[in-house]
Structure formats: C-alpha cells, structure tokens
Image (cartoon, rainbow, N blue to C red; front, side, top):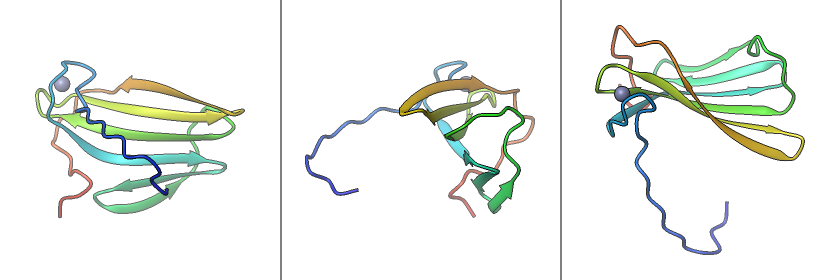
Length: 103
Ligand SMILES: [Zn+2]
C-alpha cells in the first residue's frame, strides 16, 4: 500500500472478556475458497475451510490475554462488496500458547 496521507492512529487491543491491555496474537487465519491458511508460531498451515459455508474471505486474528488466559478473535469478513467486523470469545486456555513472533 502506498501511503498518500500520514494519519497516525494508535489503539491498544484490549481483551474482549476483561478489557486487560496485554493481549498476545497467537495466530492469523485467512479463510478463502477451499482453504484456511493459518500463520502461527509453528509456521504456516493450510486446512479445509471452516464448517460454515460463506462466500468471500474471512480474516481472523486470535489473541490471548495475560489476565486469565482469555482467548478471543477479531474477524473481518468480506462478502458482496462490504466488509464486516466481529469479535468472538473462545474457551479459556489451559496453557500459554506461543505467540506468532517468538522462537
Ligand atoms: Zn482477559
């Protein structure tokens, strides 16, 4: 993307369960066509699409919160010319997963 105007915005991702500000990205998923591409600590994985049928593309970023191992995702879904945003809350994590950028 070419930057044509310098607009600075900064917003910290907060936990969707407790609003804590220390949230770690644990994976990014892109569901498109017949595949879901996941980027995580382990590398890149290609799986079948989610169980639900949807045209377009879904981009989901999954986070884990340091305050209670809460898990949630921020999702963008593109379909028929519009993009929607949603937030999903998952089950509490039993183990601290690796974040994307750590060895
Ligand atoms: Zn939390």
